[in-house]
Length: 104
Image (tube, rainbow, N blue to C red):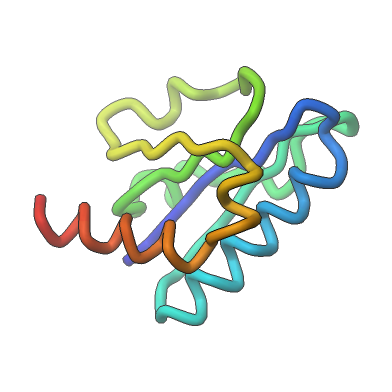
């Protein structure tokens, strides 16, 4: 599965980056490709490319705030989840996404 996403917490610092790392580690451990953009106090980092978004099977928004650029994901399966849940259970979240994609 190819996954893209955005991580953004209320302060734009700690949880943003922790959620990104947890998602990447969990997805890769389960054999998936993943790219996560961050949006925070210093702006957008690791911005997703048009090709990454186009080729993605699913979009994961690990966010606690409004983000910019949501329109880029129109027509994609989008999962929105708080950063705290991503940090606590990243593998379970990826497994639930697998189930959702396989059932579709």
